[in-house]
Image 1 (tube, rainbow, N blue to C red):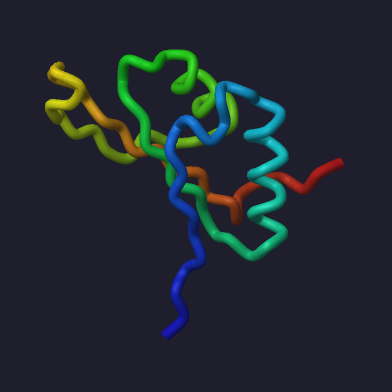
Image 2: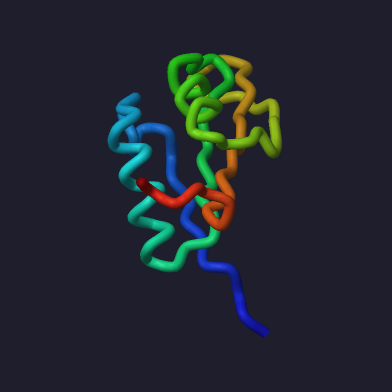
Length: 87
């Protein structure tokens, strides 16, 4: 049985830089990864805009208590097998 090759990254990896996100997606695809899974907080609206713009889909939301606050963690996923070929 083969396993999907995937990578899990935290929001801070991309530092709100869309060019880094786009380049990383293509490099990961070229390396054989099937998907990228990202975790962030619902309050980080700039990060969420980047994910939506790159085609990530929101897969899960989970309430939790961190940093002295009630927060909602989000898991986003990008299926690298569905990326259009680079021109």
